Image 1 (cartoon, helix red, strand yellow):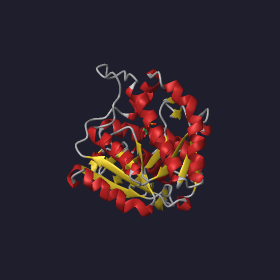
Image 2 (image 1 turned 30 degrees about the horizontal axis):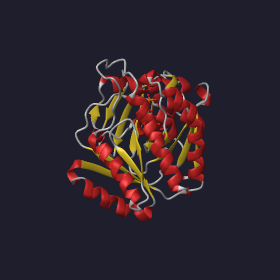
Image 3 (image 1 turned 45 degrees about the horizontal axis):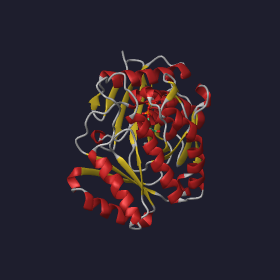
Image 4 (image 1 turned 90 degrees about the vertical axis):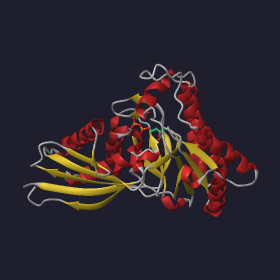
Length: 341
Ligand code: DP6
């Protein structure tokens, strides 16, 4: 019986310059380039076993059989890997997050990065970083950025093979801390798929795309120079630019929504507090994703002050906090190729 398996792991990433809007929604070719940092505090670990005996792909996520849409999305991604490798067998996929899925931390980046690496290795492929990033992108755009380590640029590109992420500085370039704050009892979000699709309906979308080139330059330079205030200010305006577009765009599946609101009252409470903390001399900056969670950026020397200040703002049971450093890129945990396969 021919069986081959591999296990790989990957971190999610935080975009400092966001991916919002696509020129090709099928291939996930983004409207603009983006910059991110991998989050060491969270990991997805995924095993893929190609097994000629299986009648269909099997997908188990965090100990539960995947629901139909997730199952289809994983199977479609396995098809991409089977096409590349010339493999016919179905596969068993077992994936675990070491962080609670319910708190709304985007996990499609770490999920598709780990699946791409494990799946390609199990299929006997040794893809280079760039090919792997292209493959991961087709599962979920932001997954392209979880393949390289440390600080990463995803170059938008014009076509499939030109749209991939690469490292701009290694993870030990800058000993930053990223404090991710998620709140309990998440309402159901508008998916990033719908958000990307709705973005061009915002009158501010074109303005965003006109200025994002400057933001990319500013953020890249601030990262290379380890200039936290330059990075932080640009990252905050950039996060609000995504939200300004989202709040003024029209989701076609939710005609009762005049715009897409990802923030919750808690989100705004943190944002306002961060500005006040800075006024009082604490150098800390925020970023947001397409959800109510907030990410705070600071130097290690200020981490205790940041967590203490946060503790004064919320009851411990109201929030979930994760502290990350810049994380490594996706890595192979185990690879067993059947010599007879
Ligand atoms: C707000 O990567 O989830 O996190 O390509 O449709 O899977 P798909 O979208 P996804 O979009 C992420 C959007 C974001 C910003 C970012 O990560 O750059």
